[in-house]
Image (cartoon, rainbow, N blue to C red):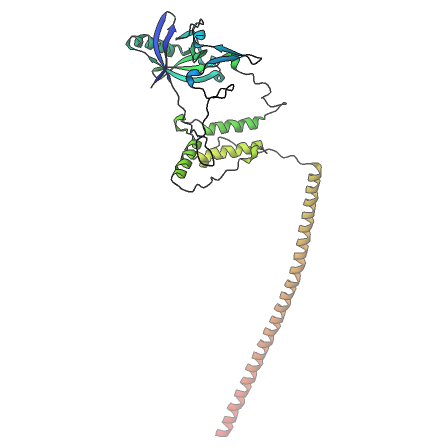
Length: 357
């Protein structure tokens, strides 16, 4: 990696020659401005506003604009003569616990590389001392024409330095907090804790820029002449929270589902919490009246059912008695027939006897 600054770390009376290397890189996709009519590039040119002529880089200097608009020229020689002890030195001023550094102050990040073989021993000494102390070093250094504040810490086997904003560069958060007193219930806090536990931790290396990938795909598609279809935009809900409890519960369930834990809802770890809805006197009265109406309708239905079923049973009794009478008549007829048949047989037999005599 290419160094952007050469100097030394001042650690008491110990001087450690180092090279400053950028620890981060920007992967953002940059666009050019073009003329829509013909696709030509739009370029910015540096023009003097007095003679309206383009000026080259060698003809451009620095100046400070005073309150009345007066330009006060400042040369590089003027700046070089200033007493700046940190011009080529990262001067360690203190060692403090890491939690003493406000994350709002953290700016750019750099790696400090030992510059040459003689620097290896003091570099390793400072690195191991930082490891054992569990502290970070606060230092002052100069870069790009100004003195800056930095924090040195150990990353793997390398000393890294984070540029820090000066304390007076951090703005106070006045007027940012919500207005008025807001009360948060224990049930809401419990659900928030459950959501945090469900989301859990994440492997930072697995996170990536989805938008940049989409832009790259868009550029590749247009470069190959393909038709680009607009992506479907999801409903963000307009930023309105109607029911905080319901939103938290749905968030917990969605997080479990995304992590494949949907089947573990009944493990007894968390009970579903539902808000109790208060009912007014009118609604309760209407509820009572509706209950009474329901009871009356049920009673009427029972009466109508019994009244309808009664004639059916009477008709069944009548048909049964009629059937019995018909059966009795048939039986009597059979008896009469059998008796008449018997007498006829006897008469025939007697007549036969008389004829034979």
